[in-house]
Image (cartoon, rainbow, N blue to C red; front, side, top):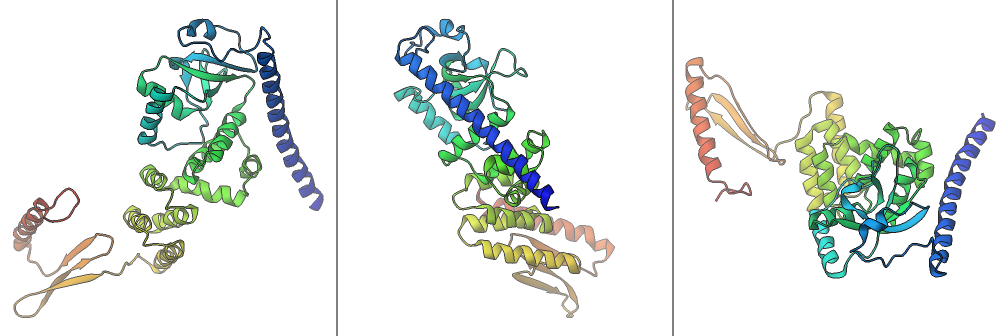
Length: 344
């Protein structure tokens, strides 16, 4: 058994070494190209080509490393983009930067057989979105050849990590797709590629069971919500449903719930499931009695915004009349609420 494990470790190490070697070969090609350009070699790329001459540059033959102007219409998104969540505000800010400073950094693209005649983004999704929002016809691009699906992901992943743009919520969706498409055979191989423990990979991918709108909201509040918060909200969602999960997410955003508090809430929900139907203690209740003192029922009010009305002993002939009166009261109350859900 020890020998088998040792062999597996060597295979994984070899795979990682091959990736490093491939990256080094591309880096060496970059150095050669830059040296050719500085020496004035005829095959060097002219990065100062003006925007007025895009067609001539686009038609130039591809090399391992070439910066050129390409048509925005010919650019397609990375099918293994490590980022899933983008802020409209940051796209607008980048578009404004294009207007005042121009495009400072080229996007990184490659050619793939699956997208004939098009350039696939490796890194630069925000920049292409900003260019499109401005109606730009061309964009500066660093064109690379010989990149496979793993390179499509890893280059963008490490670039985002360096810029601190990558979140666990982006990782969750990207890693699941990489495994679903067999770009990596399992979580162990993926862990070697991104430098993470397989247990961490598993925990992050588990977040994909959350509804997209919850992941989106977490990503928008990533400064307040880490993996510990998100994973326990996922457990609460699994055990108690979306309403309770949303309540705890709001508590985290408002700074009222720590990871430890979420762990306790998730454990409580697990305990409630193990003994039967989930029971959440109400914050207050109103009881109803007939004039002779006989109990009719009660209205329970819960901290997560729910209200439950339970009545008994209502004669069939009175039920419809009672329902109409209750409906009228609720509709009147709802008409007094403003857009924030608070009565005026």
